[in-house]
Image (spheres, rainbow, N blue to C red):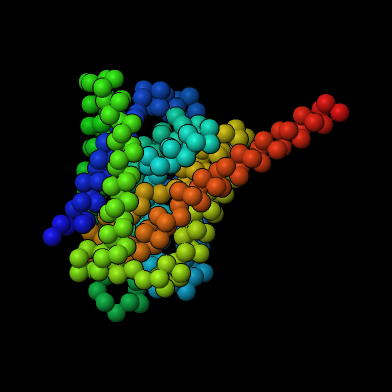
Length: 302
């Protein structure tokens, strides 16, 4: 029998390798060209978003393990999918990639620290013994399945050039489909086979909260840049990056590290909606922008 959590690690590593293949020197130039946009995006993701997630779960009737699952999800950075949505809505893709890489690095520290705080708070009254994340071990394992593959992808691109660029286009199509198969197994299989025993009642219960997390995350990411006068395009990009999370990483933390299928369920239900919700909200923001511009042009012409 295939170990589904091991397969999930492999798929996530390959996805991060694919991200590394897509990185260019210009992406890292954003660190110096647009430091304000990058700093605001990181602040929204690392500081504001966990409080938004905590507010949502504390207003919910969800059992403690699902509350922790939503918190884990909120701590996981974006990935290739968030960069893809930014591309579709003509956002600042270079900024999106810079945010993805920076968030991935910061999450090495934030995930083990904040997840353990959440476990102590939400699981305090649970009768069963709670498993905590060993800080250095967790940091190393996240580094192993996210940062190392991305660095290898960058190295491969630098060494093999155009041949790798052609391959990366197929990689970015095939790997999300493979991840979808893993998610499908997690959904349908029982816990004894590495699944989550997901039921229709679980989906019905979790849906409003994971959708709320998705939408509110995006609104926070968009609004936080207004007082600092970020461009509309950069605010949409930050909204996408803050709103879309790496569900594969959330499943690894909840399933493989914490051995709790209940904590995996929010990430799986979130995965059902996240791409479509994120794209829809981002596209709506673009339409609002175009409508406002058209109205201002009409007034000028009058």
